[in-house]
Length: 77
Image 1 (cartoon, rainbow, N blue to C red):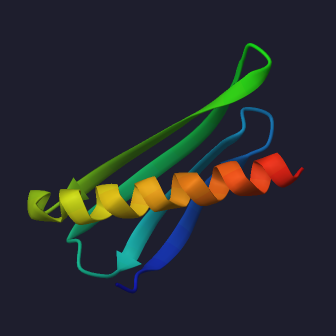
Image 2 (image 1 turned 180 degrees about the horizontal axis):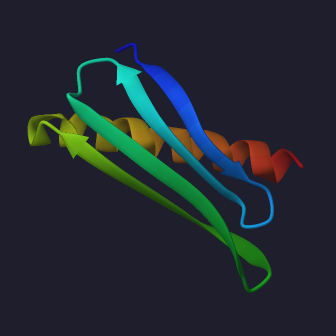
């Protein structure tokens, strides 16, 4: 699957990134990723607003894989 994304906002102070997919299979795709302090670590909240709903399982699987990569990279320091 190939998608072209557009950065909407990036805020270092709030550790928040908002983007939209402008070319791909989705007719609507807006997303926000934000990192929050959580004890001795961090918590990532990633929210996606997506149409058509039938793409949700595929996008969910891609998100799961992306989270694995994020964890690995962050652990490498």
